[in-house]
Length: 242
Image (cartoon, rainbow, N blue to C red; front, side):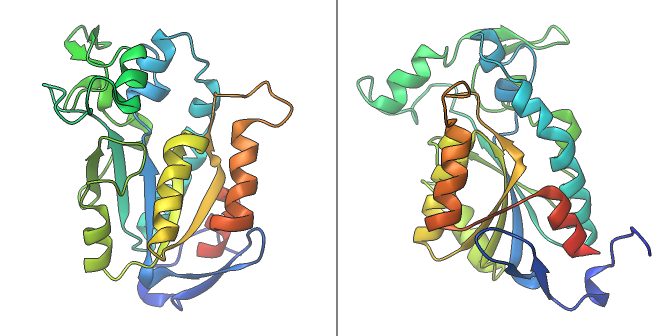
């Protein structure tokens, strides 16, 4: 028995992915993989979360399985789409000063000057800086799509829906952070647009509410598998590719 991934040209496009609440019929020819906000501000030392005293260990733990999923998806020709939370340098896309989007991000240090690990000047959650760069272990490759977003959902005022439609994508394998905020927001908007979403639960994380009797992460998994889509794991996704 081999552990190698079979190229797409030799695969029957419809595969069975073990998932909750039911097995998911994965059509490789109509699927894309989303990587949501796996960027330095959320998952790296010196990023916005870590500077604010937020525990980023769960996000960092999601990096290795996500990297393995990326390898499997690329080997099978599944398109990769990276979404990054990042605002324009003049903050013109954050919203009015009294809007929740502006106020909540301002509390987290939006736009503040920061030092990148190499000593270069950077800014919190600002486009084209170290802070909004993808975590190195998950770095995009040639042919991958990288999009900025300025709200929690990857569909709000972005090119995402149009790009997926152009490619005939109807199914989304979802990874990223954080589970109950940007990940769930994107899955909700995808479901409203009739995409079928599978969230890989070990490839997502949520520091908010981690000490509650039911964490925000767990609550989102339940909501998604009951109403919004399906939930699976990296191992099961990779196994379905073999």
